[in-house]
Length: 81
Image 1 (cartoon, rainbow, N blue to C red):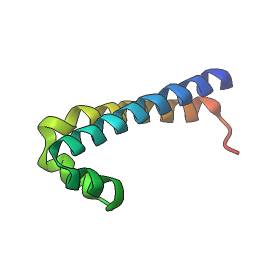
Image 2 (cartoon, rainbow, N blue to C red):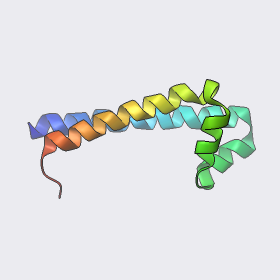
Image 3 (cartoon, one colour):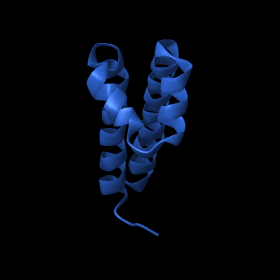
Image 4 (cartoon, one colour):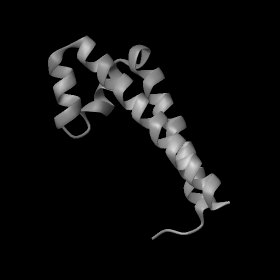
């Protein structure tokens, strides 16, 4: 069961990483300022997400799906540390 949990963790991490990269691509396509702000300014990504949901919604939802896989993997692992 722990092995399956690790598989879910790896898959979730990869999905979240892909969604994060997609989100950054969208921010930089909007403008370099938005892209840099999302990289370096806390909560700028949330502001961008709410202002540009039509463009940034899909990458954000992909990140959430990856987060769900991560949570399932943690639950299946049973042990932390």
